[in-house]
Image (cartoon, rainbow, N blue to C red; front, side, top):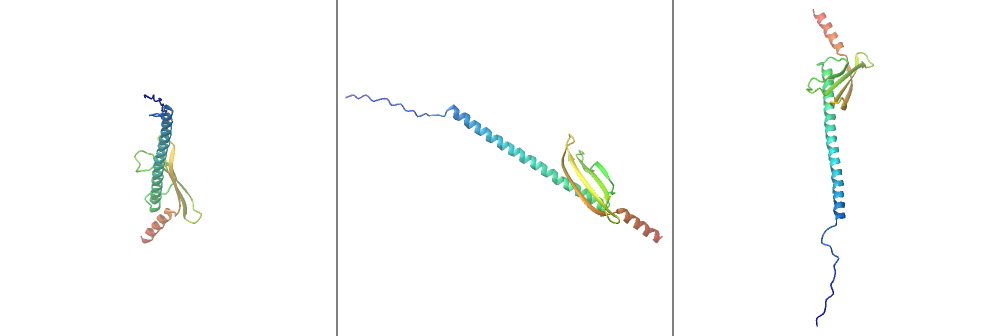
Length: 147
């Protein structure tokens, strides 16, 4: 007895469909785009933080020159810093009355500018200090009395 076996058709597939490939590719590209955006944002933040820290150091350095008497306290505007080769860093100084006898209100603003003249980092420092001319006048008066 020969029995005829019925032919069974299996609907099992052995691969993936084109729709699944396109969907997986879209998900991958979307994830890659988001990761690259985060990397760019992190890089920009790192550069910005570095410039902000350098602006603060340069501003404190310039104020230290004024306080120590290495530089004369005078109003300046957009003056390039001496140690900057590319002239990307400039400083401006304003000198106002400090409200008391022989007091000056000195404000130093340091800025970093790009090639297209946009400011992308700055730091401002304000300090009350004694008028250095007062010390010079006192020293001259003391020398005159000694002679």
